[in-house]
Length: 215
Image 1 (spheres, rainbow, N blue to C red):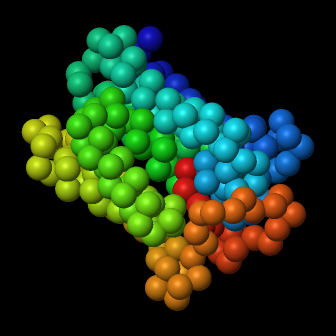
Image 2 (image 1 turned 30 degrees about the vertical axis):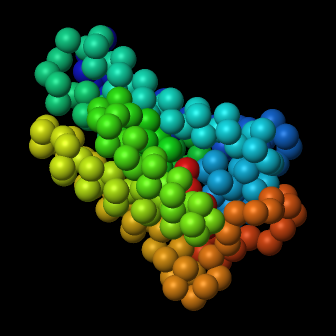
């Protein structure tokens, strides 16, 4: 298969809406509940950890596979491997299956960089866990992890294109959480600790696709 077809396949895999499908399997459209975001956090709050954990792992794997496998199969220059990872992230954020409105790409990006630079991802994961333990706010933990990933790539990664992609993804994650940053500054950002009911109110900015969750 040509690199161009692998690129399309990467996008289509990344676009697979695991949170949406998991919700539909339970008779719930997650876009209409909780924050409205199609990510693991909203899945956890609405459907619980038993559904959210598989959603998180699936989103991570759909970023990992195009980079890890397609780069071995295409026989093309290494730069295509990087493009496959970028396409998977874009697919998650702008899925063709759901009118190009998906999640924020955090888990899928983690899968991409797990294949590209596992050391940097390990450092970012530690930062995410530490921030979550201290602040109990998923959005703040994700912003911390994104910035940590960029810093780790700048200090450990020798391949400039990987560093550039990592910094671009990290910047996007911060920008995608701009509504969350506003709520954090106002002291009203939701914290983990209780699951949100499927019939519970959505938070602000859901219509703009910038709810309080990640994914």
